[in-house]
Image (cartoon, rainbow, N blue to C red; front, top):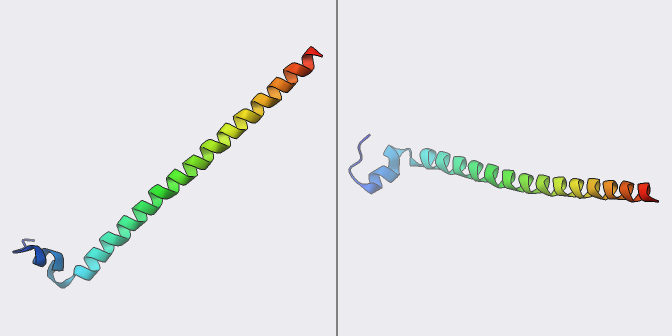
Length: 68
């Protein structure tokens, strides 16, 4: 499609409400997915770090127990 001016482009031939709302909804969905991924990733990293620290404490306690 060829548009004569920027306002004609933004009007999208009378379908601007549908076109721009579809772009907006898609952008919001993608942003929500990225934010959700980062939050989940951060929580999983913290859980792994806690698990590793717990396993280290258990291993250290077992090693100390073997020396007594």
